[in-house]
Image (spheres, rainbow, N blue to C red):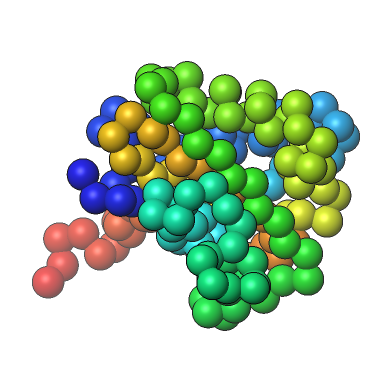
Length: 161
């Protein structure tokens, strides 16, 4: 497998984690976070970077947060942003989102990201190497970049050439 390949028994999008984030936010009286395709791409790149760089918010030799570098390079506007990173080895995928979410919610700094009232959208990325699973959440105060879902063909377009 490559550095940023999805886990073989995982969904293409780790939607279980988004549901857990929004459950935590609802319990705190906060609105849900919207899924963001562009933040998913940033988070997926960051997850791959964690495989090569280790668990760090900075790339080797860089003084700017890695997520900020990617947000800027991707021309993603933000005023508020945050990042949660984590890894674990030897765990079945079905257990990963709940385990990671529980760990983040028990950590004051990570919990603050999840429950930040300024955040309106999130991207989630996963990568793996061997038995290790890496997950990244990238938060932003901007909305307007929903994950694209294919729309069904219009009835008028069917059967026409």
